[in-house]
Image (cartoon, rainbow, N blue to C red; front, side, top):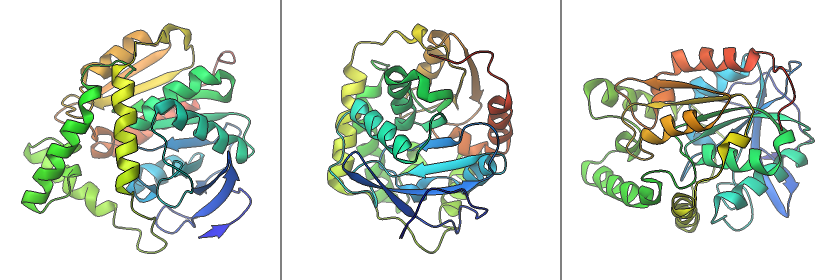
Length: 294
């Protein structure tokens, strides 16, 4: 791992170096790659139990063909220092601190699962910091079934242990032939990076994140009608972790949103359908914003 000033690089996800930057009393581990363009960079916000190596290389490299892409480990997760956050709001404040430590005035956000919840909190805290959001496999505060994510997660971790499979095969993908095949392909892609791998998440960090998700699921719903930023909302039609009903709910409650639902797919639909999702996301990001959100 190296410490460096922020700069975009022509590297691919397989070989881009891991760097660190200080901010909010933490040394954040991050990776940065892609193409500079006139628009803001895209900051990726990661899912439950994930570290940098859990991003799908096809999605990262796909975004990086048109944008500067920045991914980072949450506080106390992977190679980032500090104590793991136990609320979505704390994670949002950390993400804002990371963005400011990188010297960025405005960003686009791509939040998957828990990361989509962090994105919602961020845009409510500092709306001027965000231009557009892409949130997938996620749900609003108080959303149906979100407080039960821990139960689903532990159940599928057990299923994975009993069948000698990665739990993500059950958590992210359907048990249909196409879902099983997509899961296996996704898990193979996660192994493409062989060097400078991130540290695995600790049990303490996982438990803190599960507590954060339970709190998010038990909260009173927020007034999302105040969020006027353009938002692309996507998921599969059979999400077990964050029930797909939440995706429809978000699209209805966010006044400037558009919805994409992929068939025969679950929580990891955007990875299963990366060949459709990436061009769709790039087209969404390329559209001009009529006025500054927030």
